[in-house]
Image 1 (cartoon, helix red, strand yellow):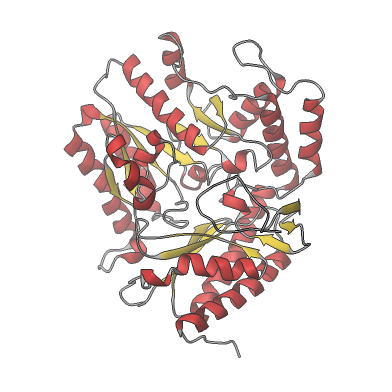
Image 2 (image 1 turned 90 degrees about the horizontal axis):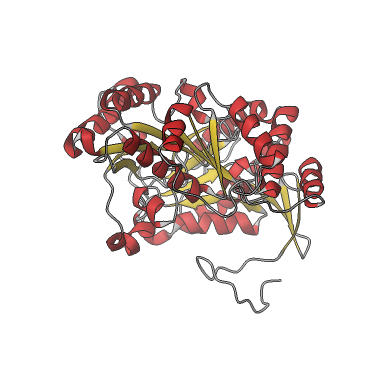
Length: 450
């Protein structure tokens, strides 16, 4: 039912039915209609819905204690989850600070970096470089790092205005460089910006290893990642990976950083870390950063629900489910299947100009001209329209504007890591039907298979 009175408000007035229950990759409304959760909500439900093991762990903790403030008690769920997290991350990341969501994680990471700089006698280091487009959160601090105009513009007067460099959208480039050369070219933008800001003033560089909502699963050339690490090391700039969306197995590794053998100085995680069972996130850093901060009077930062035992019991069960069911490996395997299906769409729909991603974080982008990669007319609102056409047919996908939030249309497909090849096929049938309907609406031809 969608016509009942509501006192809630969120981003818009777009009506939706009441959710009844979830099961695996599926969600059901109160009228009994089934939806494939093709985006894991907002790239959250990594292990699927209503997993019995996770529910049992949460219930068991509820029977013991639902809250213990971290300054009053240690709890086994938080200690056990911290130990499990460290065991699953690269060497050198061995200290964990829990939060309740992605924006909190990013702000916590930046504040830890700042306090570390102070312990090193570097009080001028305060500038945080990020990329455009990007998304790092909706609180004012995280939003200042975000490169997405519609979200940021209303609040710009309330923020310092942190510096940005171009995201490595090499698929748009029309030059004679190789992909390796393009990756290095984009990485050097960081070096140039550090020099422009003054190295003594630059605290961190924050990046999504695989792009999220603002760039639609953007993957840089391999050469980019190592060069960024070198530049940060050269100037003493801390490297923060925003793995809020990519972490917890989404890309086929526990952290996306592992694809390139990179160890960031600080990692921000959330979304799939709690997998929708509880509000949960974390920052992970090395002792070399954390211990000086603790020695100098402590981390001057915190949230009431940090390390909540219910949330941590859920998170621990999520990680155990990932390991026991081989879900990270399945994300890598099924990601290849999904990418092949999405690439095939480019032959059928001339307005699909790019397909990209890693593991089960994938996206496709609409364009009006394949030779120039010009986007569709923004007045079409394609990024909203295709979502509605798919939703009406029982498939949930996620979309944003590609070019900084004002033009372009990309669509994220990021189903739960439990998905099977047959279920990917089921998802694609609905997606093609929605794309056919969209093509008809805008008068575009469709190349049907023989």
